[in-house]
Image (cartoon, rainbow, N blue to C red; front, side):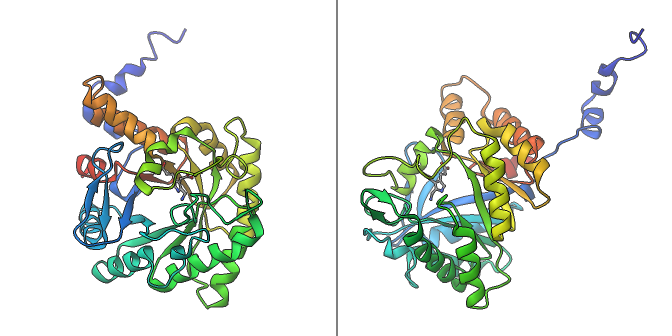
Length: 323
Ligand code: PBG
């Protein structure tokens, strides 16, 4: 008979014991902090649906990156929001585009901070789609050279990692060969390999002004019911040259993170997306939950599921609590 020889409570008796036997721990070095960079000077505009997160002009983005760095967060993920949007998303790959300038300024100020760029056209097109439109649809192959050009201009501006988030087919291979062609062979690709068509991106679209003006993203982002397809996307992107694999969103997709982790040997990254953040903030503001505890519990679950790194809007507050 197991009882009373076995008493699992013995190892839970004190905080020190619990801490010593904890299987999953969080550290500031687990986090990647997203920043929304806008044009102009002295802009620090709160995003209504994401309390604590702002649209930042470049110098404020540098200041925010400095804060993250001081707290031990190793990387930022940049989203550029240009004033001028057009059908081709031309500001995405302009040498002096907003995201290229932000990369340059952050690397100048903080050479040790890793700067990752989200490569996608949706923040840069007037129609809000992830690629150019032909016959009412996102044209896959015609968009690949533009994504490649965006990757190259960002890497030339000093980006440490390129993170394509568009979910078009073949873009990892296209970006890899474009980078290699200009001798940027050492710049890694973090592929948003497994990205679902999700309602959890709602607040982000306010932050990045990237809501599609017609239709949706279901013809390129994945159906939430699928997990075998996630493994297929993962395999394809690794074959095409991805150095790291991302799963997104995180919280409703912990099983997917776990399956991808078991499948591959490369680092796995999870994106704790905008609505996952906003729901915690809204409930905390109402006094319905303990926001700090819930935040750490959610981040722990994402890591326990198998992700090595977590992209999260909670980076600064979580790093403060953990530091
Ligand atoms: C596309 C992109 C999106 C997010 C990250 N990259 C939006 C989308 O696919 O519609 C969402 C991130 C979030 O919700 O926090 N550039």
